Image 1 (cartoon, rainbow, N blue to C red):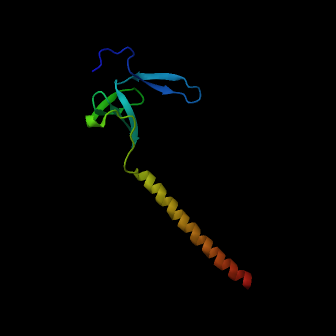
Image 2: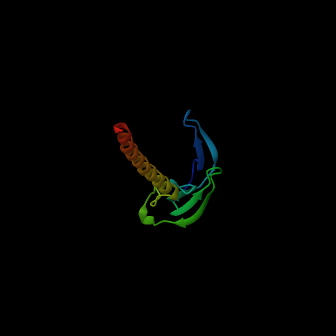
Image 3: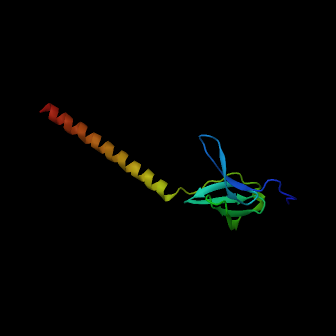
Length: 117
C-alpha cells in the first residue's frame, strides 16, 4: 500500500517535436501499460489489479474489469486478434496482387502474339 503520494498522478501529452509535456488532467495512481483496442484505451492499474478505460482527453480512468494479481506489474499489452480493418486491408492487398499478376500474364501472351503477326 502507498503511505503518501508526493506528486499526484496526472496524464500528460508530450509534443514529439519539442519534448514539452502538457498536463491533460488527474488520473489514477498505479497505471502501468495502456493499449488501444478498437479506439478504446485500456489501462492496467498495477495497484488495484483493475483494467480501466482511460479517457485521453481528461485523464479519467473508469474500471471495467480486473486482472490476475499473479501477472505482476503490467507495462505493456497488445490485442491478440487482428482488428477486422487490418484483415480487410490484407485481403484487399492480396486481391490486387493476384489481379496484377493475371494482367501481366495476359499482356505478355497477347503482346507476343501481336508481335509475331
